[in-house]
Image (cartoon, rainbow, N blue to C red; front, side):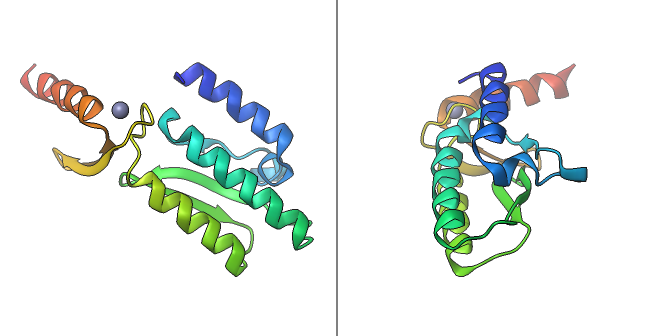
Length: 136
Ligand SMILES: [Zn+2]
């Protein structure tokens, strides 16, 4: 999934999951501030959150922020229950082992002080870009 497809998918998610569509500033959708590599694990998370929302009758529950920070996934919600926390912890744990660009198995590393989670191939490309940028 490339970046354009990822953005299209985000818009679909906002329509499909009410807790994504109105969680942002002034009741707008929340931007997914992370790479397309995490699409699959996010989809699994949203499915699980939707089940919890319906089962526990959490009408007002919303995701208020979703982003990549220091190589890891962060998901913040309007309020939390044990079930919500567990679902989010599981997704965040998966993200540490998933390339944020392409979705292949990856790991956390630090490149010139940037904390990233990449598969070996994407890490190599990223490191090369950073090398080139520094040698210009
Ligand atoms: Zn990758």
